[in-house]
Image 1 (cartoon, rainbow, N blue to C red):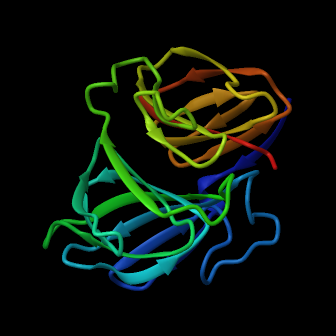
Image 2 (cartoon, one colour; image 1 turned 120 degrees about the vertical axis):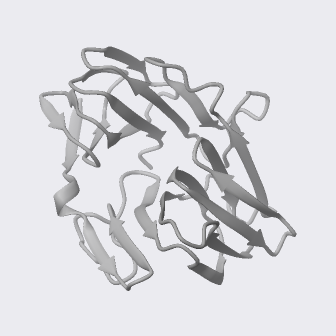
Length: 236
């Protein structure tokens, strides 16, 4: 098993007033040649969006785009005609495919929203663009991982155009979480949304991450009340 440690305090930052962004990988004004991607994971932005503001209409193509609100809600509108609001406990996914435009605004006029914006390189390029979202509040049970995203169209998850599996869970201190790689050859990027956990000798605190590859399984030990996001992805 091999691992790469991504401490929260080494992320890139950009503060433009209405948006305070933290970049796990090179993005926009932040460039680090050692942090361009981890396997198929290209972008992990931890954004705080001021009330009444947001991202105006802009284009994407050939990228799998996942949005996970941590706090608050976002209003979404795109060129496919999709309009809606995504709240904490829900997950949104878009296949940009041949090309889309969309906008995302903080649903609140007064309160900040905090979201994770995640991009994966697609498995198949130039597919027809699509949009989906799902509420996972009923599946997020204490001390259990809930599968959010998978490449299985028949599963009770959001489908992704990639051999990737995303899981999330809330865990009490002292829990031991055993995770088996679902797709041989994949790596896994563990992101601590809240709390603290120990993996492969590394202690991860809030917003720290560990990318692990060349493995078939791993064990995570929680050291505080924690919310963990596990992204199993091809290493390309």
